[in-house]
Structure formats: C-alpha cells, structure tokens
Amino acid sequence: MTRRAESGFTLVEVLVAVVVLAIGILGLVGTSAVVTRMVGQGKRTTNAAQVAGRRVEALRQLAKTTTPPCTALASGSATLGGGVSEQWVVSGSGRSRTVRAIVRYPGGRGRTLTDTVTTIIFCG
Amino acid sequence: MSPRVAPAPRGSRGVPVGRGPRSGFTLVELLITLVLLLLVGGITYQVIITQQRVSRRQAEQVALQANIRTGALVLPNELRELGHGASGTDLLAMHADSITYRAMRAVALACRAWQDSVWIRGDRYFGYRQPVAGRDSVFLFVDGNPATSTDDRWVALGLQGVAPAGGTCAPGVPARRLRFTTPLSAADLAGVVVEAPLRTYEIMQVKEYVSNGQNWLGARSISAGETVQPVLGPLAADGLTLTYRDSTGAVTTVRGRVRTIQVTIRGVTDEAVRNGAGQGALAFLADSLVTTVALRNTPGL
Image (cartoon, rainbow over all chains, first blue to last red; front, top):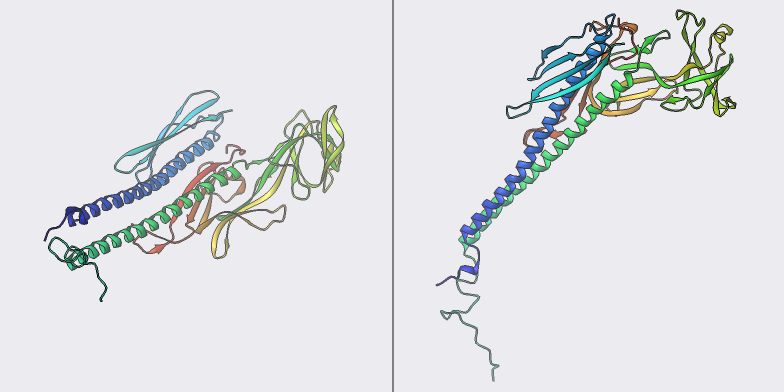
C-alpha cells in the first residue's frame, strides 16, 4: 500500500497547528494581563495624585495660620504605607510661594514612579 | 438480456476505489484527532470563559475607579467655597456621612435698593445660574458707616420674586428686580451703598443614602424642598466619611472652627465579579479614595 503525501494532514502537521494555536491563545491572555496591570497602575497613579493634592491643600491651609501668612510653610517629607512617599518643596518669598508636591509610588516590576504637582500659594 | 453495467474503477492494486485502505481514516487516526480536538476545544473554551470573566472584572474595576474619582472631584469642588465670616458659617450641619451648607450661586451688584427689593445690574451678574424665587436667598452687603469696617455685615433675605425691573441701572444697563420675602429694616436700608454686592445662595445637603438596598452619594437642595437625588454610586456600606479638622489639623465638632474637610469615598462594583484569573468566587470589589479640601473663605485661625 502506498500513501500520497497530500492526501491529508499528518499527525506532525496537526501538532504544529495546535502549538501555533496555543501560542495565539497565550498572546490573547497576555493582552488581558497587560490590561489588568494597567488598571492596577491607574489605581496607584490616582492615589498618588490624591496624596499630592492632599499635601497642597494642607499647605494652603497652613499658610493662613500665621500673621503675616506663609511664614509657617516649610519643605518636608513623609512616608506613607504601601511604598508611597511624599516630599514637598516650598520656594519663593514675598507675596507668593511655589509649592511642589512630589509623590513616589511603586509602578510594578520593582519600578518607582513619580508624580509631581506644582502650585502657587498666595500670601496676601 | 441483463443490462450492461460499467465495471467499477479499480485502484492500482485492483481494489475498487472507495473501499480500499486509502478511502478514509483508520480508527487510530480518528481517535487521535478526536482527542486532539477535545483537548484544543476544551482549552479554547476555558480560555474564552476566563477571558470573559477577566474582561468583566476589568470593566467593573475601571467603572469603580471612575466612580470614586468623580466623587473625589465633585465633593471638594462643592465644599471648597465654604467659609466663615460676618454672616456666620456656611457650614450649617456636619456629620460623618452628610453635610449641609450654603452653596453660593451668584454674585451681583445692587444699583438701587428699597426695603422690599433691590435692582441688580444685568451686566455685572456672575454665577452658576439665574436667581430663582422661592429657592434662593440673598446676602446683601450693608456697609453702615463707610468710615469703619466694624459695622459691615451681610443681611440674609429670602427671595420672593425675580423680574425685569422696568427701568435701567444706568443708560444702557439693564436691571432686574429681586423682591424680598421679608423687608429690610430702615436702618439696614440706610447702610446699603450704591453698587453694594449681593450674593445668592441656596441650602444644599450632600449625604450618603440607601436606595434599593444599595448605598449612594446623593445631593438635594433643601431650599427647593427636593428629595435626595443620586450623584454617584454604588458605595460601600460606609461609603462616605467626612472628617472635619481645625487649623491645627485636629478633628473638631465646632462648625466655625473647621478649616479642612477630609473626604473618604468607598465604592463597590455594580456587579459581583470573579477575582484572580477568573477562577475565584464571585464577590463585589471595593476601592476607596481619600482627598482633602481646605475651605478657601476661612480666616487663618
């Protein structure tokens, strides 16, 4: 009995096709893993922006507690939970201060990301 | 005579085609194919189901994050303008899960004043919307003696009617008449200067409330007699926590001492989703965001 090579798929061909399909499906799973990471990253970034916003609001309030205003403003830093740390830098003099709130937070895969909010506080 | 039948075509070995060993698959081939198909089909099904669950979880998470971000944006924007001053405090009631306050709606200048009404300049009106009779109230600035600021005050008056004035503040400057529910005293009227500022406001309440077994952030105009309207949600059982702090950062219960308000919003997903790689139990996801707003119109201490 003889068999012609083109008469159908060989087992090897089918196995190769299965492997190719598996690679494709793994690729699909990979994109979903990327999206999950990005959603988690979005959450951490939002949190970092809120940390910076809270610091700016606290400094804005602190600026008003003295007469003349703004004399209580000073640079500083703090460490929060979850690998988040913040640093605020007050610069300038006279009728306004420039405040930079810098938040460092984990960005996944061991990286550290930085979010900076800059504002000007009026000192009257 | 029997009919002639064409002879069946024959293969190379003289066996009729369609019956020979090349005419189909062997049982072993079929079994291997079936097993492979089942394997690949099963894996594909699992992957698609997992993918669907993961996508749904992602969509719910994104919606949840958007929800609490909106809350962290809307509430500070509402509360930022609150202040304490000559007219008392805008903070009318404060609780952990609700806050009642005077929400400023517009600023205008009065060009003429009577005990029962004022005319406001149509070209110097700045606000969120036009004044609404029966809903808005007015703070009218009474200067008193222009030589001193110690007798300056804001007089609160209800709004009974808003109408075109039937005259102008100055040539070409349209005027609107705001009629008060209770008249201004003669002494106060004497203290109203030309171009006296006035502010319109309504009393608003923002609170966490329960509807259909779920918690929501809602708001209502107490001045307009509204029932609470949903702003966003669903929230967790303790979805809104307001913490009121004084100038030293300590928690205070005295309204006039509040300088910053810390807003904590805890949201939950609309629907239960499977956690992990889509294999875990169905559960509602929760997420929270903490923000702080410094009240802008407060004195320093």
